[in-house]
Amino acid sequence: MNSRSNIMLVDDEAYVVSALRRALEDEAYETTGAASGEEALRLMEEKPYKVVVSDERMPGMDGAVFLALVKEHYPETVRIMLTGHASIDATMNAVNNGEIYRFFVKPWDEVQLKLAIRSAIEKYDLEAENRKLLRAVRRQSHEIKYLEEHYPGITELRRDGDGAICLDDDMSEEELAEIVAQCNRDL
View 1: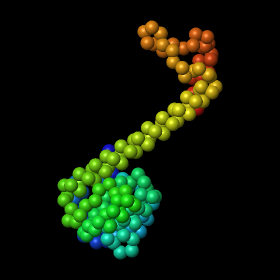
View 2: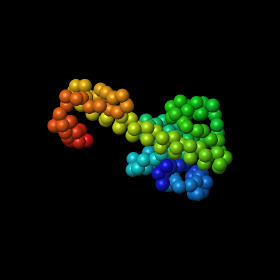
View 3: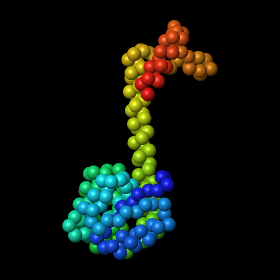
View 4: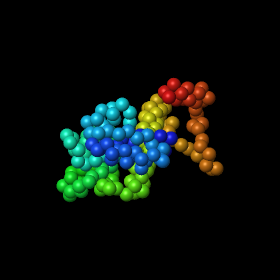
């Protein structure tokens, strides 16, 4: 986990944002509060947030609409919803449209909320690492295709009786040096 993880807290009632901040003050998080979905979206344009915790019922844009927009514009951000009035319709709408990671009813259990946020950050970090590894695999795949196009058979590994990788016997030192130089230029 990064030394500081950015968490967005969204509720139209300032005391709820303050209570959430107090609950998280012992954690290594940088919390940002917003009084509305519109304000939170503006703030999210400035820096990435790993987790968003949003109230369901807010004037103007409600939490389900806000979290659906977060999903659309910042799909990697993990979304958690708080509500004081858990209706089945609102819950279904939030889960279906915003792909909510967790749903908490006010008043929330502080320990459970902390654990959920910690788990959400781990999920975010793991998915970010997976995206990074996937990019590396795709880049390496393109490099291998390039080598195979320019040096047919180069990607075929041949091993001797001890399992050591053997180079093609008819490949000169100059050809090998050219392959290594080309790989270095392409990096």
